[in-house]
Amino acid sequence: MPVIASGGSEPPMGNLQRPATSGVPAVELRGIVKRFPGVVANDHVDFTLALGEVHALLGENGAGKSTLMNILDGLYQPDEGEILVDGEPVAFRSPRDAIAAGLGMVHQHFTLVESMTVTENILIGLDRPRFRLDLRAKEAEIAELAERNGLRVHPGAKVWQLSVGERQRVEILKVLYRGARVLIMDEPTAVLAPQEVEDLFTTLRSMTAAGRSIVFISHKLGEVVSIADRVTVMRRGRVTAKGLPSAGMTKPQLAQLMVGREVLESLERTWLPPGDVVLSIQEVRAQGDKGVEALRGVSLDVRSGEIVGIAAVAGNGQSELAEVISGLRTCQGRIMVGGEDIANRPVRKVIARGVAHVPEDRTGVGTAPNLSLVDNLIMKAYKDKPIARGWSIDMGAARASAEELKDSYEINAPSIDTEARLLSGGNIQRLILAREIESEPRLMIAVQPTRGLDVGAVEAAHRLLLERRTAGAAILLVSEDLDEVLALSDRVAVLYEGRIVGEEPAATADITRIGLLMTGGTAEDHAAGDDRHVRATGGGHP
Image 1: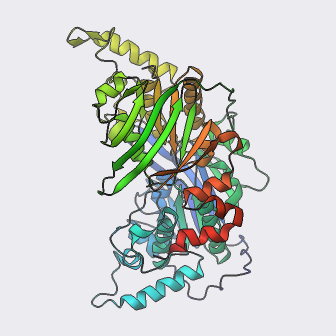
Image 2: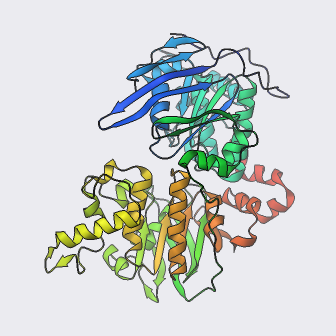
Image 3: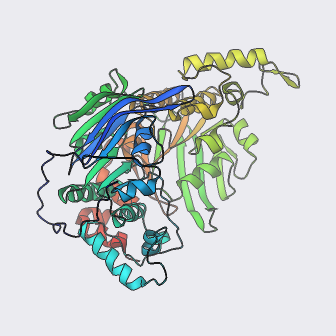
């Protein structure tokens, strides 16, 4: 099995030219087949990654992308087919084998120890040094690696001190330090602010210019068009478009390749006059799970027929805000829904006031994974007629209701008896939206409603939210996808470190200003340019 060295002779960062992508590919997958009980996840898949390129891998949820990349990362072994690295066949039995061959995956969800430094996190799991660690020497080594690859982060900083973008740089440094020449990046921009996305893309271009190759998995098609050299599309376990040049391709074209039909880039939104205030949040404060204040005097109104979007980078209090409104977290202050204070009331009382909640955690909070579609769909209606029959449940009525919702919300499952855990992410989200919308809420709290969903599922979720808005519901949309916030919202409020730091109509919102506010900048920073923003965020230094 070949081992790709870390490459101490890389050219210095600067005016680098991207290496030619001809010759022996960095990685080649031939005829990969992977079966699971009842499904063929990969059906004779071919994929070629050239030297020095960014190759985007696209597909709907359940198309087989993750399975293919888990095979390449050594987590799964293929049932058929072969993997070639630098033209030589290899067999990976674990991620350790893959990293030894120069392949590393940067996962969407970070795996860092917050109480440890950047250097300590990077060294975790390595065999060497075996007996004595010269931490200062290792910090200097990692600082040089970070500088060479354009990854601004202080090796001595504690992880808890870092922004989300800086934590991602640490994850990238972890695989680079282990000698990775091929990086698999799974939804790398899912939790980044616009400026952090730009920084990441600058880093990726620097790395490909230095000869590294990158597999880029994303549902954000605008970013794919911007960063990728070539695109491969999978559908239902098979490759439907292999290695297409991305130059000249448009988002609608990519979307059609993914789902096999035209997908609307943005849904038509009709202007609605704002109605009465449905939700009034007044000086709300709340503790986070770590015992520090996560909400620091938040005040905000949401009116009938209005979507108010919360723009924030992960960890700035948006999850806690959704939880205090829905009754899942205690707080100080007042939360008025229809004129009644629901702060610190039981969840059942909150639901009775007409509040629906689409939670961020679909399986831990939004569904009971081991229960059937029927059980999950009637969770808010089992005490009401016609499903309730005295003290018991009319299972005939429950099943009829579940069948109707399964069809009308296009939940793709073998039957209504299928356990929720067996559904794809998009179908779990459809299930949750069906249950919450059918309760005809006056207020909806939608948290990350489309995270990790493909373009077809995103379009369906957006359509459902806009229909509820038209029906007169007030909607509080919490999303780390700024494009989604601007596309759906009537007003945008920026939340930073537990405070509302800006608010403006979405139609006239300045995306650069909002991005700065999301990362700790100010209106003055926007007027002065990026220099103040860099000083405000600290550039990774504690």
